[in-house]
Every structure is written in C-alpha cells, then in structure tokens.
Length: 253
Image (tube, rainbow, N blue to C red):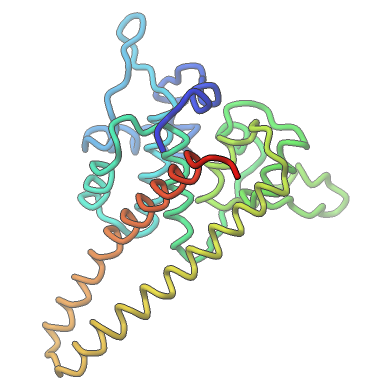
C-alpha cells in the first residue's frame, strides 16, 4: 500500500523533538535511543542548530516495533521484519501493519489517562473523538464512579488498534464502516490463524511426536516453531496489502 496523496494530506504534522516523539509513542526517550542505536529507526532530519526532527514515519516504526516486541519477537527478528518493508512505506501503512500484527495476539488491555491519550494523539480530544475511537475498538469509555465524569478516569485501550485509530481519527469515514472493517479483519485473521495452526499441527507437529523424539529434539522443534511466527506474520501482512491494493485499483462495479 504505497503512500499516496491522500496519506500525505492525513499525515502532515509538525516535526517532533525526541521528547515529543517518545511521548507520542508512549515509551521513554532511553528506549527510543536504544532502538535508534540498533538501527531500527531511520536517522532524524536535522533542523536549525542541527537539532534532530522526527516525522510520522518515525512514530509509526516505533509503534510497530513495540507491537512486535509484545508478540515476543527478538530484536534480530524485528530487524529482519523491518528490512522487508518497502523503502517508501508511509506512517499509515505502518499503523496498518501494527494493527494486523496485533490481531494475532490474545486480547490485552492497557489503561491510560485522558491526558496520556491526548499526548499520544498530539492534540486535545473532544467527546466526538472519543466516540470514534470507541467505535473502532481502540478505547472503551470508562464507567462513571461515585458521581465522577467518565472522562475523569482512565481509559482501557487496545494497544494494537490505538495507533491506527489515532491516525484515521479525522478521516471522513462513517462509524459504521470503521466498525464493519474491524470486524472483517478480525474474522478473517482468526480463521487464517486457525487454519494455519491446524495445518502445522497435522503435518508437522504430530508426525514429529510420532517419531518419539528425545528431549533435545523437542526443544529444537519448539525453538524452530518460534522462528516461523514472524515469517508467517510478514507473509500475511504483505499478502493483505497486495490484495487490498489490487481491490482498490480494480474498476468500480
């Protein structure tokens, strides 16, 4: 999904300092610098007085790195994953990658305050913004407690969907369309995961166990299995992007 004119309009943002980038990504500056030292981030643009300036692609990469780490990938595996991305990958593409990768993980929820949520968004959020994020499943509205306003509490957020939700927050798409799109992705990703698990179980794992392997052999197979997951994720995300690009390029019926 190549970055196009529409994405350029959606991702034009003020340059971020290293502190602002870390706040938007929800990580520490120390972690950010560690990723940069490992070569997982492209170097920043140099502004006046040679101060580093970061853009939306840096933010997208950081969020994708965090999700891949959440999936249990090593830094070496993450480096290989990022190396497979197109050179012109845009921030919206990176957010789609993260959302799809996160769909392979059992659902987990984090809680952040409204102030933290607005720092992640880079701007104040009104009730309509919160409604759109909730409709996408990126956040859940907290229930009032002891007469307090709901906004006073913390928000349960989906760490995989939140970055994508924030990026398309201002896109003029009906809420019903956003909800339906999320349901389609979840439905097909679960079905694909189920079919791939059954295929691996029936054609690889069960025949291997039937060979009566020793303990060392079992450990080697488990280690090899862990290396398969990032390859499968990369293949699925790439296949999805190509299929979507073909659908978008096809003449309207």
